[in-house]
Image (cartoon, rainbow, N blue to C red; front, side):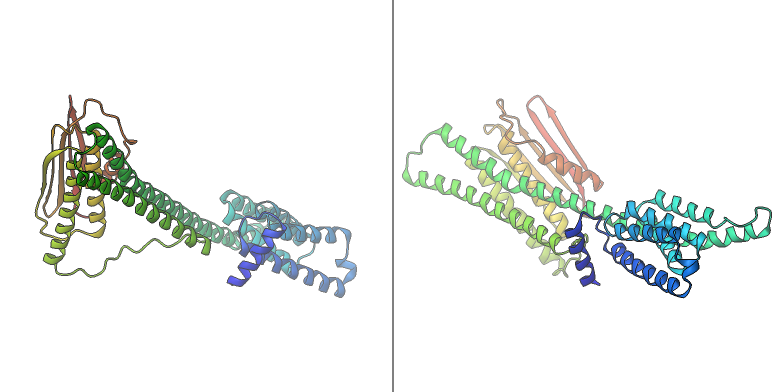
Amino acid sequence: MRQIRSAVNRLIGRVGSGDDHPVIAVVCVLLAAALIAEYMARATADASSTVSVQHLVLVLVMLVGLIGGMFRPRWFLWAALVAGEMLMLAMPMITPLAVIITCTGFLAYLDTWSGAIATGMLLISTTFGVEPGSGRLLVATLQNLAFYCFPLLTGLLLHMMRQRDHDSYLLRRRQEREDTARSLHDTISNDLAYLILRIDHAETNGMPNSEHEYRRQLRELRDAADRAMIHTHAVIDSLEEHSEQQSQSSQPSEPRSTTTLPLEPAVDHAAVQQAELQSLIDDEEAKLESLGFTGDNLLGELRHPLSPGMMRLLTGLLTELYTNIAKHADPSEWYAVSISFDAEEIRISVSDTIAEHDGKLGLGSGLARYRTIIEKAGGSFTIHTEQRHWQLDATIPNKL
């Protein structure tokens, strides 16, 4: 089936623009071949009643509709449907009946209203030749209603499934773009911001007196630039990986599994995460000290391990908060960062003093992204500003 799909896609790409429905194209080819075979057999057996200009024209219109339906099913299947109904009224055949039923199902799959209109046309055409006052009309209507509504319902069901898959695919693509944007901001943007701030700080304070201090500052600047380069390569690799996965299959990719590996004993795993958070805080504190900041950094005791998603969120938020201090706070004033844990939520509190000449380095979208994520998860995220004092309080439910 995969080889047939690939061959049909190549044929569609060479002949003209299609709607990317290879199954419809294959069925149209089979129906066209069956129509030609049946009509030739009927013409050979009874040429006087079969070979006529009217019948031949209807057969040709059906063939044109089926062949065109390989490339533009929304347009050409209507021609096959109408010609098939007229041919069925003039000369009952098996293939035209299969054509009109199949076209009705395909039109319902492509568009709900098209399927309903096609079914209505079928029901009306089947009542021709039946006397209105006879009981046969009611019986024929009920029979045809049950018979011709089957392709309509089948097409509608497939249409709903396709729409659901399409919506799920768009949702995953949107989530991937949001994750990429957040990764760019939390890594490359923050690294470059720190680099700019260090250069500005060095320019303001002038050259250090000792060569050792001068070389140390150069190494720190190079490390910041190197981190930005590493993060840039990581984002590029991630984008290329998504592109390769999409090119290998036209179907939406399956969402990445969120199943976590079995954790080590709770105490040991919590201790590892505690050490990772403390190391991150120490690194960020050292960066701030190199810019002239002084403050308190308090990390509570983590008694229970956090999920991988919560750990990524927490580390990203802390990195953004420290970068926000470096960008907008006054280095001569005290700052404070506090993180505490309990069984149900994580509490984060940050306070600093806004610089008098805040250069507004950055777009201001980093904290807004985290506010959206935390509030969607049922947490709270509040920022209070009074004169130059800036205060953030956030609570994150420990369920991500």
